[in-house]
Image (tube, rainbow, N blue to C red; front, side, top):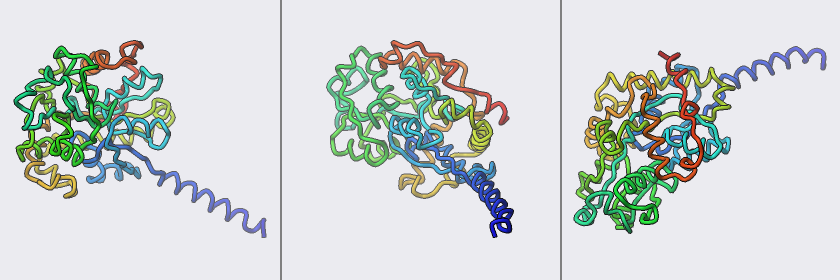
Length: 331
């Protein structure tokens, strides 16, 4: 019986192995699926572009970018849709990760001040002793908040950073008075502005606003992965990048309303009109081709060296924080 079943078992084992290989799930952690800055990930899934590449992608949401990076380094995910500045921060800490496709050239963030506190907080120079909302300690919002304060004459010791997450938790923290100002993304920012609960203090939602506030383009949302995993799985990485490049082309060729029409209702923050309006106003932050802007990494490094002890005291090779090889192949 063993001789008779042997060939059949071999065939079944091979078939099972091939099916498993084709259906292997790729897990990507999104540092907040509700945030417009990470919209290309949701859109790629909704448009079926991952499926077209033969990929089974699972998007998992983690509100804080620093926790998303922790999940990646723990081996529980294959990549993170998060901020490029984590690649620099992690290199300074002895970890090697790379951006494989750049989704945005501006943070897409906005520093808001609660309307009740707008008379006494008129710029980052007034941040001393103020409860400042960030998604998490060590997150990109905390880096940027600290940088804005330091470039306006304050010290890190003057700051009171309060981790409140994003979306609804951020909104509640501001409305309940637990924070007086804070950095958040769209559509949360526009919903707070429309309700009269907040006013804009520093606007990083466009390339122009970012250049004015930070002195240059600040590459932000991207897909980053561990370098050793990239080298071991170049075909899988290429398929992911192909899907994202195709998504960026779709975004560049369609209006904010047409893009929003592809999204599930729960992503629109309960107000589709404001979502479309906010996306139309900040759509220019997304790259049309997925390439890293040439001078962008240096701007990010300069900001991190100002606020991050590890980055300031360790040599960082920017060439090892991103690669354009897969994007160029996609084109």
